[in-house]
Length: 77
Image 1 (tube, rainbow, N blue to C red):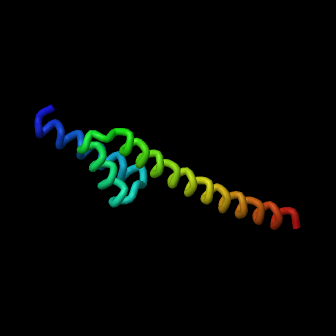
Image 2 (cartoon, one colour):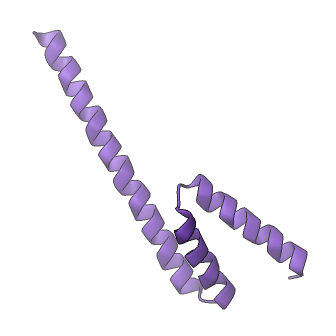
């Protein structure tokens, strides 16, 4: 892969990780793993970012459930 194509791939990876909500420090570690050729480490870091996002999603869902329950209680009263 030539330098320009490699730079484009890296830019695409960074943009994807940012859009997915990964933090800059996490992205730097993922890129470092990829650049070192340590794909397993990069995949593990991506899995960690995914888990954080899933935890946030579950937290948000719990908040929505509480609001829905409060709304239900108010309608019921």
